[in-house]
Length: 297
Ligand code: NAD
Image (cartoon, rainbow, N blue to C red; front, top):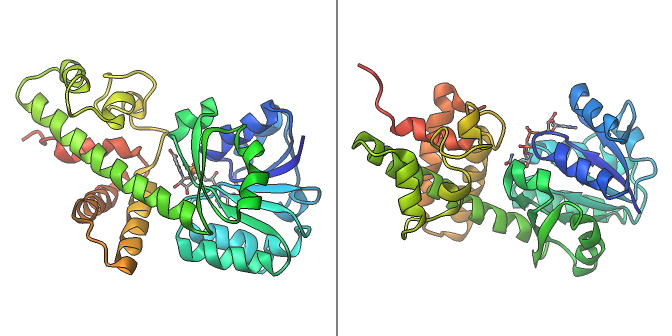
């Protein structure tokens, strides 16, 4: 069993760290929110006052933070972990961030002989809780092989996408498609409801027809069609609109660099940016269906 430090215990990181504890690893945790730390300590994790003190014995450090600036600050900032990690430590960053930050952080850590892989995930909070996430890994094959037994405690499908940054490219392609599917599913369900259809019945029909997709089947945006999804819980928890808007921005940056045409992704980015601008950034991304609902006159 390994000494693992887990940093970033939010909607995703909390349950991922819990699965590492359940698998028998010695897990030390850190987050800026004391409540998030306390939840994991209850499950058997250790902690310390500062993030640097949390990595003292770490053979492996895993981070699950909101965006690239947080990851860059954590590892290469003035007080960054770069200065406290032992050579040979394996760093796994599972946050969804831009490829440029991955390359910058990987190069800075490599100078101190610290190993790094980008390993963003798919599967949502449900997948994090169930330990069934998909990991898309970028980095050296030897580091991927070393990380695999640890990742298997948190996920079911572990892919080596290529060199540093390849995991992030795979992730933004996936999330761009997810945003397009969620917008399209919302639009179709709302059209049906506007024409008097019961969203449960319409969902059942489309699930047995060619409109079937992951958002319709497992993450339906209409409240009370499915249990245990954010739409049935006031769009709380899950995957925030702000984070989806961030991922779509990353997809657009990636597309610009290769001059790739992404008309549907571009539209989805605008929809999510507008939804966030109207004060919905903290709601789950399936709340995009509210964009299609008619307001009472
Ligand atoms: P979240 O906002 O719930 O959690 C982020 C956590 O990081 C918070 O608890 C915050 O306090 C902590 N944090 C921020 N800066 C920190 C720092 N410097 N040191 C320590 N802790 C710090 O976000 P989340 O939903 O868990 O998402 C995390 C990442 O995973 C994001 O990059 C997101 O895009 C990605 N992701 C999320 C989902 C999902 O369904 N929520 C799915 C796949 C990928």
